[in-house]
Image (cartoon, rainbow, N blue to C red; front, side, top):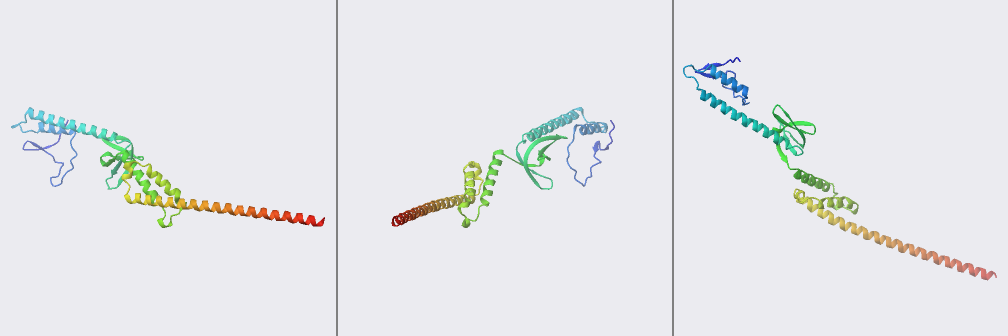
Length: 246
């Protein structure tokens, strides 16, 4: 293995790094460490050679760092696998946010990628992970508020909107306590007011229908009695005419 390096005062200088420009810290792998170690041994000061103990200490330190790096990578992959099925928010490099459920995880070159709706995102870009129960509660709260937003103006409310209001109220009654806590209180108050008003309108409509049915029945009865009276009078007239003819 040939190594090119510049040595000054028994030390290897990095000629690839500009002194006035900060470089990115990408870390070193085992090959890079071995290259540096070989360069140190090759270009060490003959008058003050580095002791074997120091080389061993350097290698031991590097081995510990490498093990920690491997552990961190394994932990990262494990953490990524645990996100499958969960809802996450990914903040892209351009600042845009993506929210979705993780379908599966892939690994490439030591990095974990989360697949959301058919697209891969770096796990390192995940900014938050939502508990499935919280997501379900949040969706329920959003659905209820959306239904209430579709209600007509309170002053224009009539019994024909009964099904719409009762459907929303039944949905509210079946919501979990956690979901109800996520709903703005003004929505709950509006729903209660609409429900109360609809009950009054439905009851009023039922009474009106009952009265109309009763009135219709009375009119039908009067018409029937009038027809019977007319029939009787007609029958009597016929009898009288027959008697006078005889």
